Length: 259
Image (tube, rainbow, N blue to C red; front, side):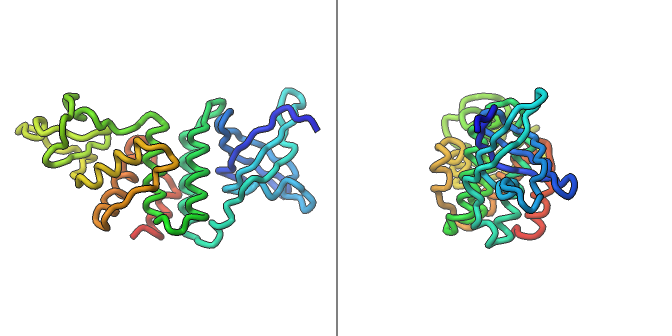
């Protein structure tokens, strides 16, 4: 059958409407966020139901009727079945989906965000040697970089002067998205803001690494236990400060799984 639109995407939200229908939010590379009415998807004999669940990455096929696109078929590519073995992974994957639903927009090229969540869900489902704090923090930082909120590593967050070397004490100002130079810190009137945090050189280097490497290498770094905790907290705080958003799924994850 010839379709009017065939596009790959991942389900980041599903809302039951009645006994047979669902409203799906999917993120695609070419058309961004799409809200899709999946009629009859919950029927016992529906051939599309397997791909109409949270975390499912599929090829979605649409036909056009009365100037509207109607979902006609779904070809599943990956369900990330390994997630179902661990409730913490499901909770973290749900957080990733909520973030994408917030930052991605309709009719926008979102290939980088789609690739990011696919990489992170694959890591959660299959790369059991990779710690969850690392996957979560890398997702948060890479999301910020893709969305245009990458930290500034080259100049002072306050005065804008070039950073020729790391300050003796590293203060990361999350609102300004950068660190403060020695000269600014030496001013008698200087005080870190409520979103200014002192971080170790190890944490700074990890932040810089994740923000500057290709996605394929974003989980290839190591930190000692103290820096792991600091790094995780900073990445989480950075995304919430920059987006000015509280995520319900993040609250759930923090309450139940954060150590």
